[in-house]
Length: 322
Ligand SMILES: [Zn+2]
Image 1: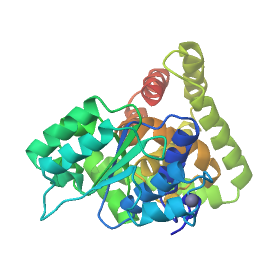
Image 2: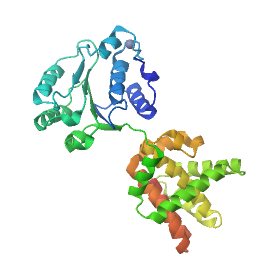
Image 3: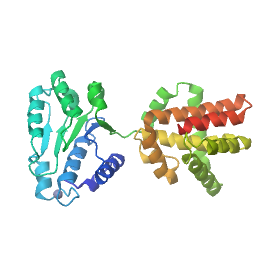
Image 4: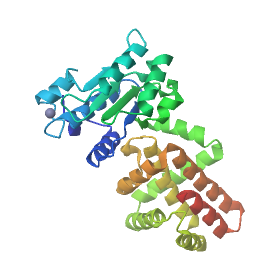
């Protein structure tokens, strides 16, 4: 078994968990959701090793790590379905164990695999533990069918989605979120244009402009209304360049959208901005990233029919930062 840092892939999830652990901000309960067989359970076990391993690395070699891997550690509690169900007895046993102090480690770790197979009485019993988690306990729920879990269970867990999107899946999501075919077409055209320019002759100038625009935008918030209006005025004043500037922003927010949906970093156009774009994607989440993309597309079409560029830009920036 490899150490936590040697796990291949799922960089974002790994990073979030490690950061949370290092800053003592781990949630009481996580829901690792995503397709079966892509490494959610491995990640949960690796996290258990990270937390329990005396070397602080989840080395995978020491006796503690090995006992975790063999499901033979007294403070790691594994709950799995039997004959396609997790029954209330399993949850009651778990609750008795959690009522005791951990034997060796500083906390209990509970791993509930295929959590969507909790039957309804088991789910309701587990809910009590989630509502009032024992002080030193980390619950890791794993599910490929998270929508089958009780809302009340889901809402008490921090969801960590696991998946890798290919280009096809992303365009599917875009199709769902951007219903208007003309707008979808526009997005593809503008982002492809952006890619061409990013690789084209004005390379440096292009990168510079986009970086500064993105940085300006990142500093804005709904509370910074004056700088927001100033930027709107600056953009609106540049009538010739405005469509292209919107194209730049669109390519950035397309990347944010992809990253917010756990798309592969390889699909990102603005690679030099990968870190800030990833941070923004974490902040936004998939839904808001979609709204922002839609706001940009809308502004782009409004510019073709409306004269009041200032107003369009103000509305756009407000939607981008809220
Ligand atoms: Zn170890």
